[in-house]
Length: 410
Image (cartoon, rainbow, N blue to C red; front, side, top):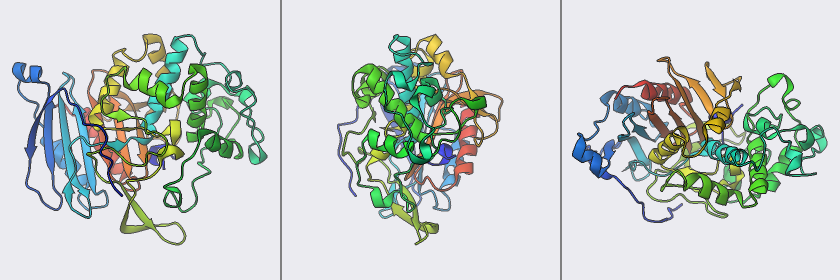
């Protein structure tokens, strides 16, 4: 759960999917590694310009990711600089039935949720309902007091900004996940306060803001969610839905409600490696983990979306529909992020990524059990989201391909 970049069964029907665009499908033959590519453009755009064409080299690269079956399926959405969208798929959506990966299907975006939580906090700052340099204590008096090994944790010495950019010192551990991983607790529901209390019993990684030390902390974002909820006076899921998802016009993004363990259709199935008695991965043996309770991630990683909708979010964030210029500039003030790829730095809920082509992109990545995703946008508006259906394999290869997709010209 929330691994990878964050390191340091049935299908629910859901509401009918709504599309503004006309879908132009080009589906290849159905094989064991069934590949499908579709291109999407609005009806008006189709009248004015030719339909977007998929990039053959990117399609080949996506197919290479799933070639050995370790990553069963892959899906990607590319939003070009002119706003046209091309969707790609490769591999299989279900290793049992060998069904195709659904084009632009719903997936767990995991830690990319942090961008949404951060936007909610920055909106409140822009509205004067909180200050980024306020202490956590101001909003949650007496709540953030460490116990046991975490005795040094104190909300009076921790700011909202430090939660946003992972300099708060909160533990990097997710203490309620057992050594065996998500499987023993896949159906367990967790309250945010329960997650926080478990984290407060763990030793801090450093004193808040100490020499600008950095350590990725999912627990810090769970705490940030509680701060946002208190400052807004409404439940966090409602704040994110109304102020971020709806404001950006996202129709295929949602914050799962209490008890919601499924993913809306259509979606590929997510997998992780089977584990031996010692908790070690058994290569070649995959377990279906599509259905589980995401409350263990909360404000740090609970959201579900389609790749194209996540790109729409990135566009709305960059073009000013979600944040005023001042708040967006704050979001992109970065600190060094040891352990991340070379040239990557962390801002307020966003990652600054120096690409191989010399371009700087902004976005995030996320690894929930069963789904590994990477999403970013370049300054000129090219947005890419890549998702594969195993979060425990191929991370370097996925990152290399993601970089290539962002740098491509088509």
